[in-house]
Image (tube, helix red, strand yellow):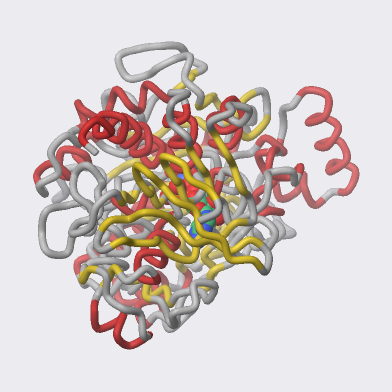
Length: 533
Ligand SMILES: Cc1cc2nc3c(=O)[nH]c(=O)nc-3n(C[C@H](O)[C@H](O)[C@H](O)COP(=O)(O)OP(=O)(O)OC[C@H]3O[C@@H](n4cnc5c(N)ncnc54)[C@H](O)[C@@H]3O)c2cc1C
């Protein structure tokens, strides 16, 4: 073992950077942070709209591709995941959303004591530096900047008015007392620059003498003595290294990376480990199971008025956009992934919002492609709490080989009605008195698709990930649980998982802020448990 520390954190993403900061606050803790990607020096990481350049770029993105999936017409989807300091928070859409209070109360119902909304709210507030000021629901002075958008376009206002026409109330703050409603997103940005966890949490801590950060260092397995985790093996260039953790090893490698590392370390379903020839350290059938994601169905409407498509497709305008950003840090380059949000219900039978809209004043064939050459906007709708479950499974004992990602989208029939209902709500908004006069036609999928069977087929053929895989090392107390409510891996010692893979059920909203909350809470639990080691 070349190095000995107290804590090894694997993965410097949304969760890992928070842990590196909080655990190294105590100068007595020696902390090592291992990150497979490089430093966040690519300038596009810091320009909000730069996700168009960093997604699908192997220098900053793992560039995963899912297996052919019967539920979406056997298509394979690109699944970007950040591979850089800050992880996915360095390449994501910046949208700041916490989910619903019932999500966390439900985690408690599933056996996870300590995770009720009332108990997690202080951690959301602890990390937050809310531009609008402090309140019952919001914090100021934390490391994570949260601010209002710096771009408004009339089509977005018409969209909001259209949603109100069909009875969806305006909501100033979807992270406040009530989530339901239509309003503008808030984002993780400050002064027109992205606010990743690398920026907010790692940068202020990186000069601490008790924190070591190693980049381009890919963990290959956790090292065990019996059932006690004692260190990590990682690869840097062609070299394999081993490091020792006196206190704990913490996996924060994300919903794909964390189950992969566990399986490569002999913790997982024994049939899978036998198949690839990995000796079983502890049989845990749930590792890599319970994969959930938000599947978005993107409707594109051609408009009578100009949208960002027109602005971006005009070379002179493009120069002006660059100039506006350089001089004022405003304009289209500050665009988060979407402008307008809606949380609403796919039918009147549903007790709380089960669908979310992301509205963008631009359109493209798929996220990351160039804008269409005509005026249009996108109205994307996704189911918030899908029943369908997928899996992550290693294909071999080689930790560098990508695992099989099988999302199994729309495999549970209960998800079909929500997909169909979501498209219908999108069309009702489009046909509302406030929005309809601005629309020329429905471009995708097209008004020829009307029956429920046709709309389900649309969902299968036109849907995309909204980049929220979660749940693959689920927290719980049942036989499929991977970690307990203190995020300790069942059946072994001194090993935790802290990232979005621990969500037993995916939250009803975007997943970055909830992951940061999970890491804030985990840091406190790890500090409390130190005395008992
Ligand atoms: C394109 C995109 C857009 C998104 N948009 C939004 C949005 O607008 N709002 C929102 O709330 N959420 C969004 N999300 C989702 C959100 O960013 C993620 O849910 C969140 O960042 C997950 O955090 P994490 O810590 O679990 O994983 P990550 O942030 O992905 O971190 C995992 C880290 O571990 C590293 N790693 C993996 N394996 C290893 C290994 N073996 N050794 C060492 N390091 C390893 C990775 O390189 C990475 O840095 C988006 C995600 C993407 C990809």
